[in-house]
Image 1 (tube, one colour):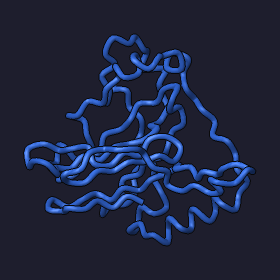
Image 2 (cartoon, one colour):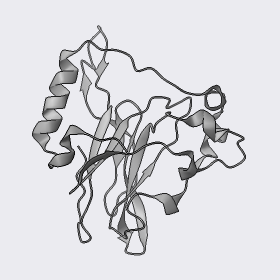
Image 3 (cartoon, one colour):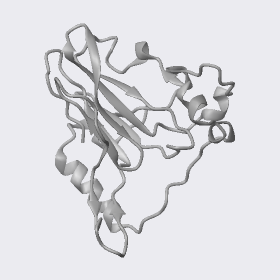
Image 4 (cartoon, rainbow, N blue to C red):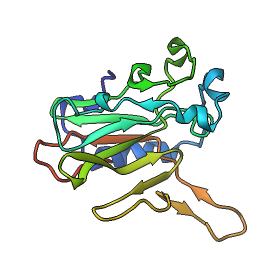
Length: 194
């Protein structure tokens, strides 16, 4: 768990805006990727064999309406994003733990996975049936996300922000680097993720 200066009070949009201003004022530095060679060598099928353990979903044990599950890094998504949970006690960073995953047929030493982080997360909520929590929102990789509502099916992923997409000089894409997700109440029908 990471102690944050915001832990003594509620997180606000102004806090996030302030953090964004600080980051925007600094020169861009490509993220340093700490992907162990065992993970970098996995092909598509081997990486798909690594699955999040649903019983370990954030808020499942509390029987809240929303649950969070996390993606495992690999060669297609090597960069970690910081995921923070916000509740009445403050802000807590979600730390990577190999115990959250079933590695299937892969033989990976969990000790080599320290500090790799999550490349994204997905939100589950019961939109089709009260007895099943559907995947309704995904953030995975640089700036991609996708969402689905009741009666809809997933289509294409979208970018959070794209700049100069039709100019010859090239495109610019903002990167998702950090998220703050507020703990929902027992009867909430919406989730706040900043």
